[in-house]
Image (cartoon, rainbow, N blue to C red; front, side):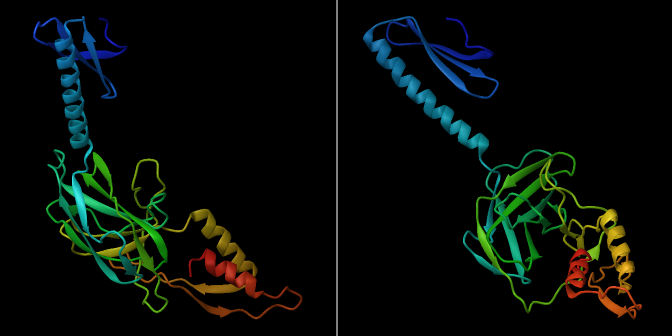
Length: 279
């Protein structure tokens, strides 16, 4: 009996009353298992071999399910829950298996498009002993909201896709929270994903919290300023503090008188400029 390609033998046991039949179990690099029977033997030996094969397959499937099980379960929010945009909610989880060695912190990310893009990090990097955190629900509407929890030591990280789905209903009357414009972009929830656009920063114990958003792209900012200058529109942009959150809301301070012969500033142009400035 030759081994399957790129496999190694992990078990070879004689079975049957006459001990002439051997049960061989091979494993390849992808953890797929191959079970073979060597030599013939009596009918009783063959029946015993088949019974052992069934037992081995059941054990392998059980081991595989344990090895691939997620190490935690989220208890809040719950599957199917409806949250109100702009409100405060709580995320709570508990371990369901021993956590990987070296895990010392965790953070949670939120997606409103079914997990394709996790645009918001709803927690700071929290100590692994702190397993509950109050977060602000983004004021958007979605019926396919997903969570992802990442844990590790900020160098070696493991992502856990939380198997639950809930909804958010936007509230047009919810107050807009103060958001600090960060100097640099945020991190990505998963390797190869775009960076988050909004995130919560703070200490590992959940204190000194601040809501932050990614800075506007420099090229877009230059084009926007040039457009504003062409139309003689002056925008009062708030000063962004380094140590404390500041509101990102901007307002039109004044509009210079239109020079004779120049084209009027249309409402559509103002709307485009407002959207580009995230006003």
